Image (tube, rainbow, N blue to C red):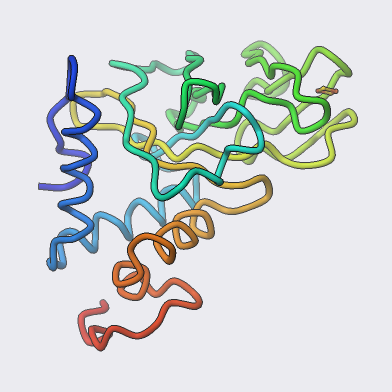
Length: 216
Ligand code: FES
């Protein structure tokens, strides 16, 4: 069963159950699991695959700096084109926003401006496909990349890695630091927490596990 085939989790303990399921997949020594994670990396890197990934986050300094890989969190039952949702991830203090762009792509970012930490808003009616807007000093971020397109913000918005399940629910599964690609963020956290998985995925700096022959 792939990561995107996990059943939706509801109620107390759901987050723990989802994390346990994800960890099982990380730990499992199977090519299926490995392909799932490669797909996550590839989709997050592109950020364009329909039904693939999203991202978002909250307090700036915490994004990408949580201790270990954050627990997966269900943030929406469904997100339709043009819709957005504000949520908190990985901690309750970490404000984030996820957006379904017009072509179906899911993206998510920190909702904390990299200038002076004002709240970032989604404006669907601006630009060719909407924009992430900070009203404090007219800061604007590209909705596909999080890069600054106008105003004083000095850095891109950190990303929150998202997965869409088969039932349409959207889950936050990780974060990156500002300016860090999804692949870089995932590999950094795997190197810290799951070095064997980092090696199998070919993350730069990962120590060989002797399983390179499994790579496809
Ligand atoms: Fe966002 Fe200044 S705080 S542009």
